[in-house]
Length: 284
Ligand SMILES: NC(=O)c1ccc[n+]([C@@H]2O[C@H](COP(=O)([O-])OP(=O)(O)OC[C@H]3O[C@@H](n4cnc5c(N)ncnc54)[C@H](OP(=O)(O)O)[C@@H]3O)[C@@H](O)[C@H]2O)c1
Image (cartoon, rainbow, N blue to C red):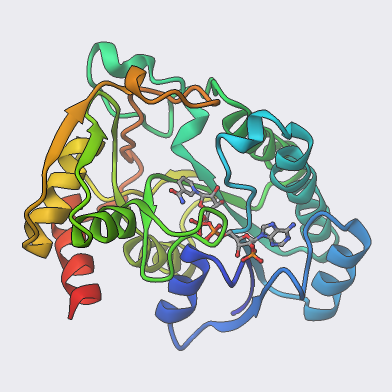
């Protein structure tokens, strides 16, 4: 099976390359090879490769800055996705697109239930709205698609668009003995890109039914609990305090609750187990 990977330089892109099964003929494409915002280029590249599947991990991911430059977020996350969807339609390729827990508003905090594939999105910031627009475009243009929602990613490469990830930030500050204040009233499912990548290849090779899938490590925690576990696994001691989200003024509103769960048979290991493996691997 021939797969064109868009966003090959990214955090998830790197782990998709690292975990690609032998049966997959993977064509990794960086931004210099294909800019999803340029329609003619997208069409030309996809037609010339003629893949069975286009795997799109590219995105505009700056959640706060997006509030000031919505056109840039929409250009990549909605128009870019439309360009890919059209190229897939033309060539008959399946589109597997990565989306986010930020399509949800967090109101399920009331009963502390994770969001499933059946919940209706209602994004509350520009990034989330632009990602949801991408989802709707795919659903309107294509029949052969997978929309894979992931959340709070960390991986060896660090997010290219965000300049790292939460795990690296905590470890770097702790090593410098900087006191930490971490939000303890926002909950999510921390997720290892290596685990997501492996599950994506499973979905592709098993040819699971098309549609929306939630792929995160199982369970959830607050950012503060996440930070405590990182320090525990790294055996670092530092002054760390829980704070409310209202103490950190940010441009974008964030859902206070965005744990994801699959009701489509996607089984993933616990976030603590994945985090331990990741932390030990980068420290060794
Ligand atoms: N990181 C998270 O916590 C998180 C949470 C939920 C969902 N997600 C979703 O997961 C996916 C992967 O995220 P990630 O953490 O791997 O992000 P990342 O490391 O920033 O990777 C995104 C990649 O997209 C590329 N890109 C940006 N604009 C492009 C364009 N116009 N044309 C082609 N490529 C372009 C970037 O290229 P350059 O390297 O050249 O900049 C980068 O390599 C995204 O869809 C994101 O929305 C992420």
